[in-house]
Image (cartoon, rainbow, N blue to C red; front, side, top):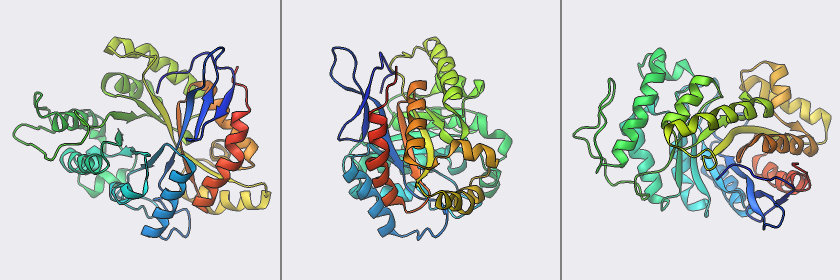
Length: 344
């Protein structure tokens, strides 16, 4: 995915992508849509294989480009294990990219994570891309006996370790916390050199420096940013990339955790917000009302267009209720509105 150029009008492809038509050019992708697997409990999640299978097949049939999993060990609500769920969906995912948005190499440990993700990449014929982050839950770190204050330096080292495990012909990684000397994890991923490694960052200066230095792409968080904030962070990141030998015109980004619920019924919208979103996502109510699109399709489409204008290249959607049907509603009611929008 590259950065947007000469945006004039958006249309929708059969593969679930918003497209931009440049003057005298054929349509090229500008915003791609992926989905999160419904791993956390917003209320009445059955945590069943049939539930995940129906959802994944629906997403594949609707033409979404990717299916992803987030990662927690201990959370305020039940959370199905991400890598396990993603592996279980390989055969149901069609041609979709498989993604982690994000996985936790510090909490899981770089050896177990490298081993598990290599298996997913191999069994999916190289369809995996990996986004990692330090983790935001102190309970996750306490559960595995790691000091939460060490998460940043351990994250940096763990990325070096992952790359070394997946590129055994190169030099080993040796750090303060992790080393790959004398460890060979086989079989290797299907993709030569392993999957690309993105870094999740909410857009802080330190986070963007880490992305520029260590990552193959940037993953932002929809409920932790706005189009204005994303645009500013994206500009800062692109200014940093050449310093590390990376091309800002081809460096990819994505927006994860776009929780949503489409309805024209104000009472239903309020119920979903109060009974599902607010008790589960621990952010101030006024922020969640602004950032989580619960309500009419038109409001959701407007938000997506604003993020497209800000430079977002891919959005991972996460319905908070009636998940498969909400994916259908998105394709029926939101994508056509985005397709008709002007991004001049």
